[in-house]
Image: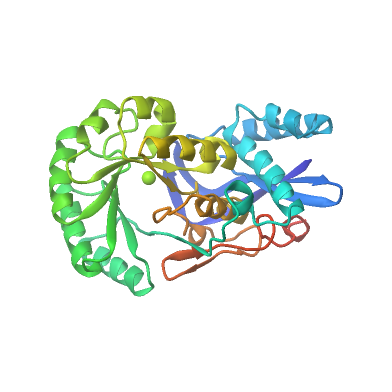
Length: 344
Ligand SMILES: [Mg+2]
């Protein structure tokens, strides 16, 4: 196993709870066995994963341990989600490549999946611009739009939702993501209005720490999705508290595709719906997330159209976003051309 660092500039600065970032810094990982190569990506997002330094240290430990086998390499990254994502992905890519199957078939069953539906994300903007952005997304074929809310006044956001619904027509799914911006009373009021505009999902209406609150918000006509809440409490506590109808799964933050797959199996049995998204990653991790979504039967539109947020990338993107769907690569493994050689 070996790895090397990379830095990818973002199109626009991105604000997380830990501050504003202008680039995504991470590591490309390669494993090789009997001439077959697998690649993975570890792109830590502080707040969601370990720090960059901790990620690098964990990968160094995995590199040393790898001579004892892939189990030892994985053990070295057990506590660091992004590093584990990278190492486990490289191993999975290698196995899938050796089996001459696309990664999603290696993760799931053998049936062919051509496309996975994706949602458009509409950032914060005034009501006019919001309506225009929704219209553009619908014209490009998106059947699901997610509006970021919570950055401006409550009434402005409600007006944006109303305008978005008029622009989208009745058939397009609308969701909102409040990123934890609302109080409980605001959320109750918002959900009544959102239900009237046939918004299907509200993501993280209350801060990540709120479990009881989210449980109480369920059943009011709009399904409750948790994203930041998973980071705060873990999937186990959310399920016990019956705090979500939908969980937003970020493979990089969860420690890898295999971990995400286990969570999907487990929550599906409880009737909780999984959605897959990224932490604004390079092409290797984004493509991996597409394969994960393709391995989930009848997955609902996922947040996988995030490549545009990067100003540069690790290599050619094998995934086309077309008419509101990601076209799933059918080549063996991840389906990415020699990216290690290309970035050398
Ligand atoms: Mg979210």
